Image (cartoon, rainbow, N blue to C red; front, side, top):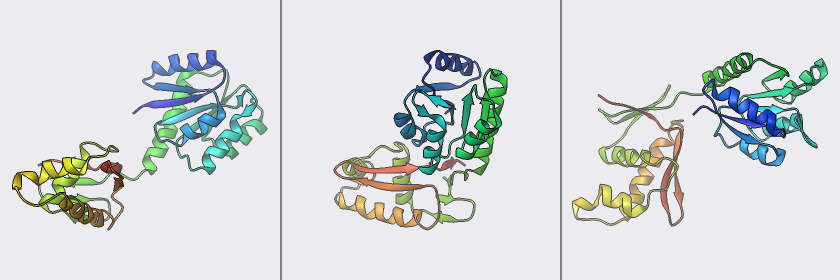
Length: 226
């Protein structure tokens, strides 16, 4: 994913940013309202955001402050024609990672973006590793060994991350061929797998969606094949 969120109420600036950033390999999405932008800054769908200081009647600085208070962690660069020290200071104190003054060079803007992406990326925990040969799930500090059926169940859920897999589909895939049992066995093994995943921070969890099934959320492990 290399998608940036541009928050600016000037369509000409938004369009120019989108074109320039596309030349550097970025996809962009735009938002011109502070209320909608606040939610999008928190959804985890972007590698970073560029926020103009002035958003019509709203303040980009206030937006950044609210986003940080709500837990947004993505890199945020503020963009403004206001170059005075007090303006830059206000933006950085609100939680922006950098402050770029118009007019600017796209090369400089992209370089600043990539510095912040690297900083955030280096702070993120690495995904867990799933060793296929011995069915071992490991992170930086811990490891667990899955039974064959637990491994198959996890692998099935990994095929549709964030999407529910119905109980009957799980049963048909993993148990129906044995010609015995009923769908309750799915809940039993979901419970076994949940307990093992809860023993350490493997970056994911299994959620139950009422009348829809089970889904795996979080950061998927990296499969390590033999």
